[in-house]
Length: 528
Image 1 (tube, rainbow, N blue to C red):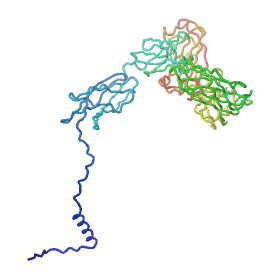
Image 2 (cartoon, rainbow, N blue to C red):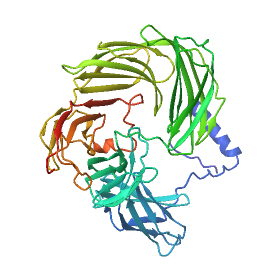
Image 3 (cartoon, helix red, strand yellow):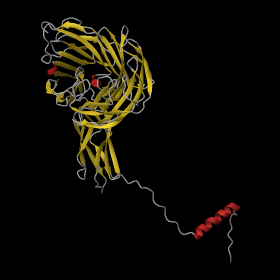
Image 4 (cartoon, rainbow, N blue to C red):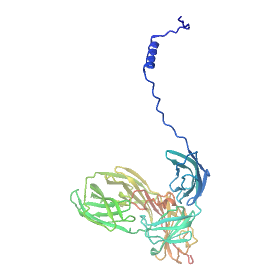
């Protein structure tokens, strides 16, 4: 007997019927589906890093220690390599290896003397295959109680001065052939005294903090120890005439060399002397610029630019370094000079910056006009304008760098220092010299005599005293002239003695200022 199933009637629409039929066919006719491929699996952490402390402290120039422990899961015996992450230059870590039991690494954290005092947020990172872990900590670096000063004595162009005597913290050493010196046991701030026996000069640098100072003696220029000569022929840009000039220069990061071909000279040039210090070879650019001279003696049209790469070796003589001029367009650079109140414009010069140590002087105007216009080459090299104003024997000279053709500039010259005490009174070791400083400059107190030692004191203060005996031996009742030079632009003595600071000379790549006070005459005391 057939049973009838009794239940609720379900109404199925056409669309639902089609879907049911398709599902039924798939279920009846297809083979069982394969299981889905597994996705990426993050491996379980099999170790962790634990530090003995969350914060360490050390002085710049010192070393401290902490312990890093690798805590392993059961069965994990992989090698874990530790490293320091997030540290500034000069802050380093040395680890003893972690290769299994024992799982402890001694971590030596060291800060060299150049590290800036600060609290640094760091981590010790571990790596074992693709598994990485880390533990965070802080390292507080403080000013060192004592450190070693490793510096260099240089001239106006930052060329090394060998043989100078340097005294810091009671220790005196002689600068090496490269101008370098090293003195341990120094604390901040410190005073450096440099004597140049062959020149009868004493230079004092006040309130220094740097561990790597470059001490520039601003009255000194030395011949660099390395050198080469270059000769060749200039072609193109037409025949030389009596109204044309050309300059040939070599420029590299270390070297400089300039030669002028006067009216009618050429087409041969050289031998052009090139000097530098440091590496035995120097790679740079040999270039030449040619122009016609107008009625004022200044360039009125540029006729050609020539340039070629060149590598020079110490003691080398390079003939046949020929250059061919290519056309160069002429533009103009003009501006207004505003001298200090009561001062008159004395001169303005145009320079082309061929390299960091090489400037080509293109024109000089010696008049009192506060307006200027120079014809300039569109040569792809930056230009510079130097303006000088004077009042009596006081002067202020401003150099603007990085200029381009077709610019119009304003040059406002600041007033130089004004001398105060001791004026024209007698002076000795106990005398305090005072003046009004110039913003953005380091002040250089300068005393000069025809029969006594010259004295230079470099400071960012507005007063100074003289170096003591025996570094400075003042003669009795001897006439001196004293002045103060504001030398810029430098924000502090540390900026002035920074190894990356530019040379203190014009025709280069940075703005510069030299402001000199009206000198005063005075005598040393009968018993200085």
